[in-house]
Length: 546
Image (cartoon, rainbow, N blue to C red; front, side, top):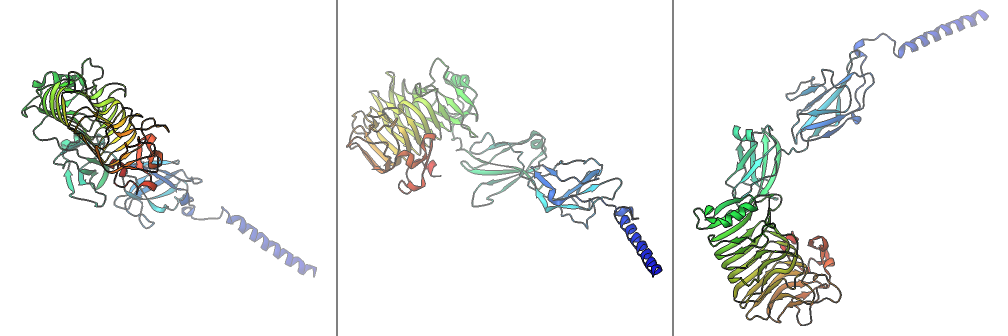
């Protein structure tokens, strides 16, 4: 019996030793084919990509024992059955053992392009890992922008420029319309000269039209810009580019040097981004009689060109004096004017359109003893006027001077300290206000329109909103017009913080104040709050209805 137990015990011991020996070999020491001693793969969930237009930063969790990493990307799909570098557009990085740490930046990519990517860990003593793919298999670069802002925009042309040395082949030009993807698309192949200059001039454009232009390298889009052409330069005018105040002074001092073949009609072009400051000059500018018509033209761009005229006057006879697309300003609301008619002359029309006007004592003044003659019409359209002083938008208080009509339309007047927005001392004047917004205008006790008891003056106001009067207090009041019964109104609204003297009201008085009607009037935002939109439908400067 003892012998039997001993035999059993010995056998069990040998079996146990065999099992233990086998288990000890199972960890890392059994004999295997070294080709199967493989590195762990990169964990897909730990791969992240930050894509830019032409580059992408890839980060990952490092792998133990990996000496370097290989990354492959392609615009073609990648999967295990494809050998490394096996697609038509494959790019393999790191085979030179250069990628040894995370992150790594891939460069030379194309904008707005979808790329597939995979990577593996590598070692000189172990087999490389299996491929790891992005969890979503691909990433997309963001849109590239090598086009600069479009410059020198006119009614029929515009100048494009782009990053110097960039590889480009063509342009695509189309009208930019929200509801239509492409309208009248034009494809332009760039020649060697344009590529070398990194610039191209678009011609044959349509005035006052919004365009979208894209630049390509082959099929790859490298940038897009939108721009709007200006009103076209009028036919029959000489075009003169104004460089600074000294040149402008020379133009008016020596007009014969600038008059060419158009009988004294001239467009004076102020470059986008420029400031022409006449404030330091000892004399005010006076347009000489040699010029029949003068247009002060601001070139289109990011901001309107600044023109500080100090107080422009005009001598002799002129058909048209026009300011277009300019930032007209002086130094403060206590000084100077935009137009200060102080000599003898006649002007068919003074037109200010698509301008910003600010920091000036008055916009149009005819009051000096030397002011004699006539102005047919004064028209201000599509303008924003801010911080206007004691002479308001118009002051023509001089006897023996003729003015036929005044029109203010599609404009905003924000902060005007004068005794009236429009003040005249001429008989037989027609005054029109249409589609305008006013805020913080007219000193208490004064009149919105003051005609100084002149005869045969008519006033027509429609589609207009009048907000708070200037420096409003609970006791403040103004008159709509200085003389009762001269105004015809349609769709005219006034807020509660612009109360009128009894008997001098006009239009409809709203039940809300300016702060309740406008979104943020103190900061110049005159969009209508949603609760009041139906109450003033169709009224006010159209820019606040957009």
